[in-house]
Amino acid sequence: MQSGEEFSRLGSLVILGLAVGSFFLFNSLFLAIVLGINAIALFLGFLPTYGQIHDHENVVIFRFGRYFTTKKPGIYWYYPRFDELIVIDMRSQVIEVHPVDYLTKDSLFAKVGCIYQVKVIDARNALIHVKDYKTAITATISSSLRKIIAELSFEELNASVESINKQLKTEVENVSKDWGLKVEKVEVSQIIPPASLIEALKNKREAAEKKLTLEIQARTKQVNLEVLNEIASKLDDKTLTFLYLETMKSMAEGRASKIYFPSELTQLVSKISGVLKSNSENK
Image (cartoon, rainbow, N blue to C red; front, side):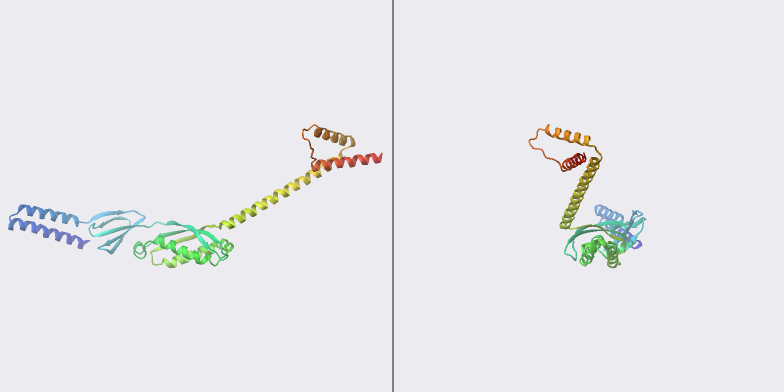
């Protein structure tokens, strides 16, 4: 900063000297005023100014196109005419890698998405050694996933998530070791099976549900028959005859031209007939 100040003062003094000399040598007030204004403008333009950095930021300063220094949180001075300032966020950032299709060993396309958490620990290296560290890390993760998943079946993919996370983190750390970053975690966030597999699983589930429903209905009918048989075995002849006649009367009063006998009623009638026949033989 001292060299910049000396340069600005020297330039201002030179122009101011030209202004005074032109007034006395050429007796030109107009030229003296013009040169004097330029001297003041030059002096003010080369003066340093200050900026403020927040706690979660660093500022990288390039002077005349070359790296000059990195400023920490607080007040700092710089020369607007010479310096280029780039603010770097030093907080941890969680970035999502959107799911894309990867081919498994058993020729299935699975959509796999990831998230990673990274933090800048050296603002200079994060700015100079890589153009865009987020894009670079995302590309590294995608490339590594493609290689890893190609060696796994879909079932193995679902069972190897923890191992895949460790491999991805190691790969990203190796690639970004000179980028001034700290890779805090890399995780597979979602695995979406292919549409054909989803359809097959859906059909399998529906078939299992249908089978279960039929089994429940069959068991219910069996229980009903057992209950009817048990009740019929405990009824006397008069009660059985009364129930039989009432049932026939109800069916006769119906408007349908045809009467369909449920299997339970048929078995009950058979039971009643058997009981009546047995009673008549005993008599």
